[in-house]
Image (cartoon, rainbow, N blue to C red; front, side, top):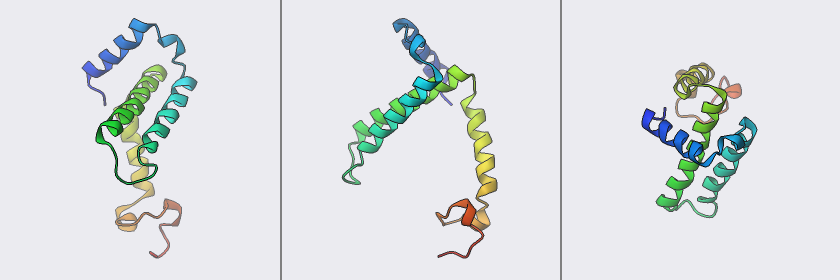
Length: 111
């Protein structure tokens, strides 16, 4: 998903600072969660949000996701498409369209 330029820039940034030594899968997963919490904080008390702040926090989440994918050797496009296929199977259009019902309850009549 990231462009080759973005991926190269992120790798260079980490290499220049010798931070790869800290980028274990565990630490990167923790960082994703921490940054996701900071993103959520942008919406904590109101649906109104600061666009610049949301973009910065979203960039942090995505950056750590890219680092984790790189560290464990997975292609983000590939795993997203694979997950999309399994999610399509869980949420068939004829049962899920316009509903926010969990897939385990989709066979039930709409509320």
